[in-house]
Image (cartoon, rainbow, N blue to C red; front, side, top):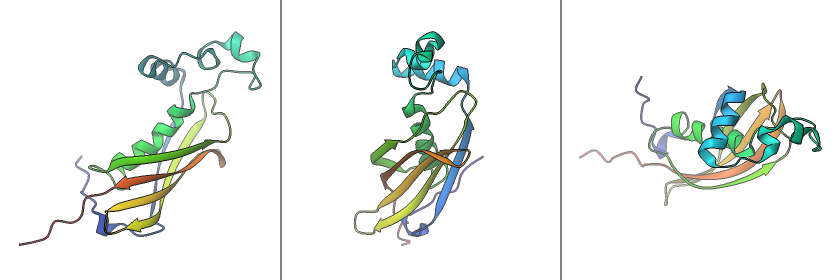
Amino acid sequence: MQVPQVYFEDIAIGQSASFAKTVTEADIVLFAGISGDTNPVHLDAAFAAGTPFKQRIAHGMLSAAFLSTVFGTRLPGPGAIYLSQTLRFKAPVLIGDTVTATVTAMELDPRRKRITFACTCTVAGKTVIEGEAVIMVAARPVEA
C-alpha cells in the first residue's frame, strides 16, 4: 500500500498520529542483538529480580523507536527527516505491555520547513516516555 506524500503545508499545529505495539520477548531479544545493548536488566530474569523493577524491562530506546515509526509512516510519513529528539523516561515498559507512541505538531517553521512535535509513549494511559522532536518535511512542489 502506497502512503500518500504529506508536505509541510499539509500539517497544522495540533495535528497528531499514533502507533501502538505490544512488546514481546522476541522484540527485546532482537533489539538487544541489533543495538548491542545486552544489559542484563533486559535479558536476565534473575539479575532483574534484584533491581528496583523486580523483573525484566524493555529497553527504553525500543519504546522510543516507536516514535520513529510514527514519523516515518504516519505523520509526516515517508520522506520525513529526523533532526533531533529529546526523551525523558518516566516508567518502565514490561514484556506484554502495549506501548502507544503519539506525536503532535506543536510548532511550524515555514522558512526552514521544520516541525517541532510533542512526543509521548504511554502504556494503559500512563506516560512512560515524553519529549520533543524536530522533523524536516518537504515543501509542496511549485507547479510550473
